[in-house]
Image (cartoon, rainbow, N blue to C red; front, side):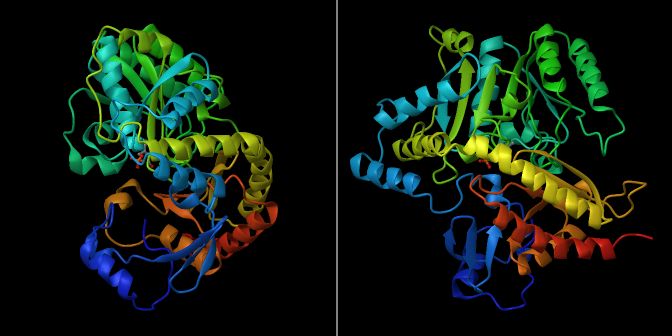
Length: 445
Ligand SMILES: Cc1ncc(COP(=O)(O)O)c(C=O)c1O
């Protein structure tokens, strides 16, 4: 993602220090211009140039409770004063209760969790568990996906961020995605393709790994029957279904998990981001009781120093209690409908809006420079190329007008805190309205 603000002001001392001594992620370092955040409250944050903006993407689609949620802040402080760290061979009230809580809020018979510190580690654990449990090696994932930056997770990632790390781990295969707007395959035909791939691979595939609703590769929502059918296909071929809920989980979709939108219980589910509302780094990999049982007498050869970190678990427990007690999941579904209407207003008035997709407070606006040809402004390669795109200019203008919006390849990603109000949505939509005039003006004639 390019820097959001378009201000020409020089970097301040902190920003310069950071630029010199800290690597920017996923970037050509010569293009990194860090912006210091000096304050953050509710759905807004303020940068060092005194811009206060609405966080319309919840930073990296992770701040489901917004900034400064007191309950989580207090739980963290309290846990630090009680026991700031214990080895994973001990337990704490926070860890045990969070394990139980995840068994309660996840669907079906998902019961036992391995805790780590990030989404990528949650997926690493899922890949290993699937391999250990099935005794098979291959993982089938999809091209328009992101599963994390560490070696296993980047190898099963489909988007171009994977390419620099190839060949990656052995045994990964990629399938097409349910992307009605941009793919030549119909979403349900892409499932037939997966069925055939699994048949042709023989009995060698341990798991099919998907984001139930694709996040950073464009908010791709499959048809209702897609995920249930994918589970059947995977099982027919002796493979498990792993759902990566790192971005879609914890109320983002108006349900607890993206899998719930389709009424599917995967065999393994991975989580991070909204699990603590990003207040602490925490990843989780939950498995069904059948898979859990397998490890009674087969060693789980996996672990981390910070597995089940008490402070992170305390934050997770407090975040989930907040979702529950403030009815934020239902709220996301309700206010998500308002957001949808407002996005449709934008689509009606901006010819460069090609498609709008999403569920709850998880929405994407895909841009086009030529609606009939569905020609994108941003290509997949832009994700790993130098320079800025029209989408970067759109979001920079929106930022100047008061809303931070993430953009990925050719889609604006809208994933605000679940606490956002209608008035705050209106403010952010007005800022995006200004931003989209940039793409309207850049359309090919
Ligand atoms: C669906 C999905 N899976 C995994 C990850 C990786 O999570 P992390 O950056 O915490 O390692 C991300 C990050 O954006 C994600 O969106």
